[in-house]
Length: 383
Image 1 (tube, helix red, strand yellow):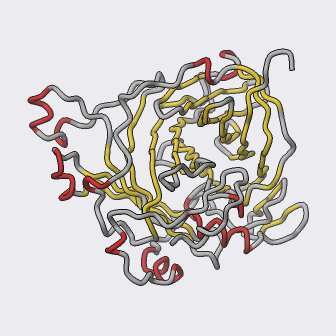
Image 2: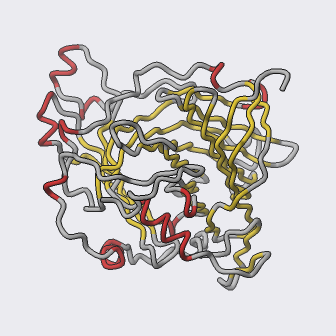
């Protein structure tokens, strides 16, 4: 059972994990303490000279600053709440499995490389867009910023040969290597991270958003939307290169992906599914619950704190580059020349005029200035 399964109160992005009968139940052994696993999995490479400073735990207040000598300052001078991080760590840790796909800026899914698609699919003329994925995640509740996950892509298989799925790629990420990381605190396992990618000036902005409701199947669902942003100081400035989407469910405590998904996976391939209609995004929205963290300097790590409710008018011009996606998801990318900012935003439409949104605001140089999340409701015309 997930450590917070007994909690029933739903907050901004609630994600209490109940006991979930599943194909892994018989395989779970006595878990290794998180701190031990993190020590075993943590990389020891020394960062190159001139590399960005890793995030350091600072007060999750409205403004946080990391100084050049490695110390941190904040408006209040208080430390990050250990209890908030501990709750977040308990909720985010575990085996998250599902499917993932890459999309163009216009929202078209990209086919998997031909060399990984079984011959049977090609003979039948079946296009394959989705990777079956695993994302085992572990956060140490005693050490803020000590979070690591491994993204595993499995080779496509035919029928129930999926029970013998083979790993195609496996990539690890540590929160300490992000240029900024903000988490949902005690109310959720949602987070936003900015990941430097490669030698070029490219950032991946990862929005992890957890569905606020647990259905009759007692399954906790989340979506991770990753925006790949190429930065440039000269015209045309920052450009959105593409969007990745991962649709995942929680399957049990952290086991470092020791059990491949197979036919018992509850998720299904989605990339070729119906895209969200633009009418579901445009219009006036008002946040009933909002949280934010504003930053300056480098080495940014914070919990999202309650923010003032806001009303947002989303029109086609204001949304910039709007990418409509399956699974009721959308991505927006806009360069605000006047403010000198790049606004990366995503949303998950829940139905009945409700949506979850996540926003990351960058400077033109790619420095994270603000991260925010909200639960929004559509405002009727004339209200």
